[in-house]
Structure formats: structure tokens, C-alpha cells
Length: 114
Image 1 (cartoon, rainbow, N blue to C red):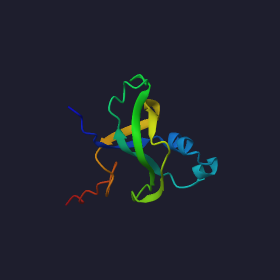
Image 2: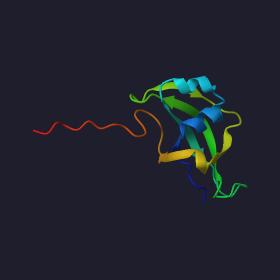
Image 3: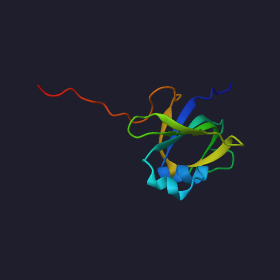
Image 4: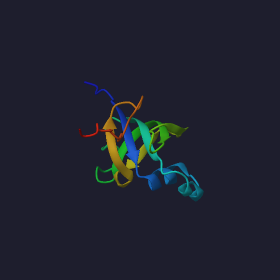
């Protein structure tokens, strides 16, 4: 029975995202934004030549940069070929689901104590 591929949001450490995208060091002076991959983990992601200790294979639909605070998409990239080995040491968080709307860690404003 074929396994359904579920959409994933893979958040990368900032330095890793900039290196992956080949962004210039000058961007470090800009606002501290967050980067994430959008796509699906491939079937047999850990068995296609990448030991589980190294990373997993992912079909990447896009790479997005979001503002902090605000969580707005300010840049988006695609990669070719789409199948990439994502190393565990560059991943800060993996979420199951798509990235429509608000995603990631979002600040919750609590009501003031009476």
C-alpha cells in the first residue's frame, strides 16, 4: 500500500538557510528573519543512501523567508532539482502541515491581569 506524502514545514537555522541559498554575508546586517522549507519527505527518505544520523530526503517546493516579528513572507525561492538531502544539523523544527497563513512560533498576547 502506498503511503501518502504529508506536507512539511522544515525550519532552518538562519546561517544554514543563507548558506543553502547562497545569500551574501551583507544580509546578516538586515532584520533577523526566519527561513523554512516547504515540501514533502520522500518515501524511504532515510533509506535512499542517507543514513538517519545524517539527514533525510525532501522534495522541496519552496524556501521562504518570514519576518520576525510579524511572520510575513518577504522572499521566496525554488530549488532545482527539488529532491534535496536536508541534514539534521541545519534543522531547528519540523512541522506537519502546509504553510498557508500563520505558521511557526507565533507570539500570543495574554490579557492583562485584573
